[in-house]
Amino acid sequence: MASSLHYRTLTKGDMGQMHRSFVEAFSNYQVNMKMSREAFEDRMLYKLNINFDLSPAVFSGDKLVGFIFQTINEYEGQLAAYNGGTGVIPGYLGQGLTAKLYDFITPQLKVEGVEKCVLEVLTDNDQAIKAYTRSGFDKTKTFQCLMLKDGFLKSSFDNSISVKEVREFTIEEYLALGDINPSMLDQLTQVKYHLAKETILECRNADEIEGYIIFQPKNGRITQLAVDNKHRRNGVGTALVSRAHLLSESKTMSVLNIESKHEGIISFFENLGFTKDLKQFEMQKILVDV
Image 1 (cartoon, rainbow, N blue to C red):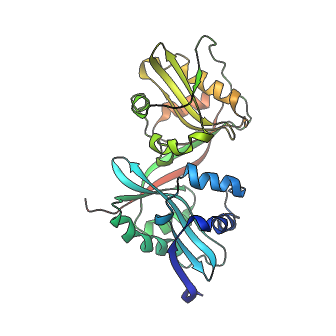
Image 2 (image 1 turned 180 degrees about the vertical axis):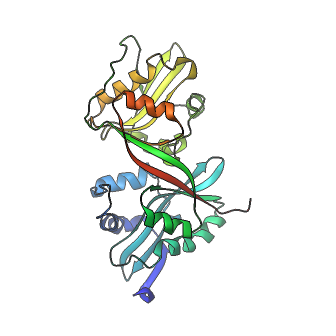
Image 3 (image 1 turned 120 degrees about the horizontal axis):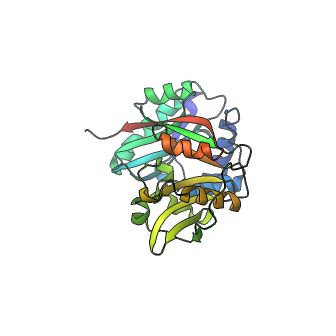
């Protein structure tokens, strides 16, 4: 079987196969990853902003049997390739295809100036962690995910705090507020590709921004929340989350990938009724000599 396998990068014309193979590869995953073709395309083209030319795939004949979906962006001061989905369909597991996909694409990543590869993996997915470690990845961060599972916020907010929806933002202004670095897929330079499906709320006093939240009203997914240091513990964060909850179709909101060392923001969400859910490791592979 292995002799019939061939490798190439993906194209937009592969989208149908990509969707089918993604659903097949994650059919037994501990998190429900099943999604419609429309939702899959939205995630690939906008949320991930997939770079087809740098997303490797392995085929058996005409069938897509393994893949790594990647986007390219600056992260922590380096040009990085973010793995937005790795999968191998049943029947082709145990052949080391993930490592072979990285071996295939790494020379091309280096030619494009990519300095490191970044991915996230569930902390209890031992098999995947071992596979990535064999490919040269090291654990760099631990992320906590939280969910508002019962759909009810515990805290009420101060109605005197003005919360307004805006259509766009200035990256520099928002960066000045936050002291928590988001995961690569949720950083502001990546969020801009998905703004059509995100809602932005701000708290401002005159021209001074006090805080903002970016979230997906369709599924209640909080992408970013930041409050200026001097306005924390004054109800701004609670007002932003409360308005986002009101505007979300899904009341079981989620916030993903808060670095576990940031206990203050995790406690903030827990006080609102969110509970700790899955944990993930961020893993990185450096492609350049340090």
